Image 1 (cartoon, helix red, strand yellow):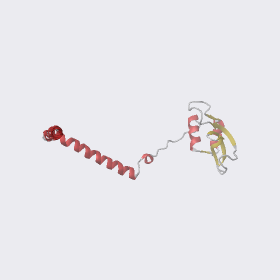
Image 2: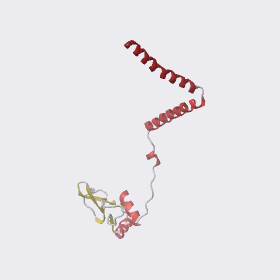
Image 3: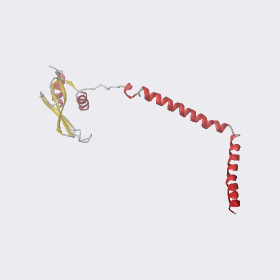
Image 4: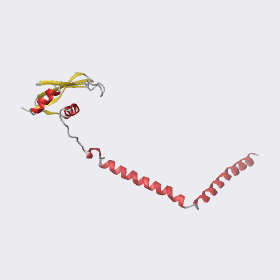
Length: 154
């Protein structure tokens, strides 16, 4: 018989409360269990000592006879010092997908093109006087229009 140490959910809707139980692996989550060895209340603060209550002696016993803890219970047992839990790492999980990579490459190309365009006018000082001449001509044009309007009204 495969035995597991796992959580059995209790509590009301949106107010979870879990019992840490030793149960046959084939039994349902909230169904029959062999022994209750603790409790977990996720609604309490993380530093609250009543958040996880665990009978470490019984947990050691069940581990010695071959019970397999679930991932969450293994974390509790590691914190309690009952069983060492190996750290898990999945660096591929954080890697962006293909489309996100393509968008990032396009964004980088646009940024590089914008930087080149911004650096190009700084190297050519001859372009600035031409811009000043255009603004002077534009400033004179409204004055001529106003003079033309006065002569037509008179």
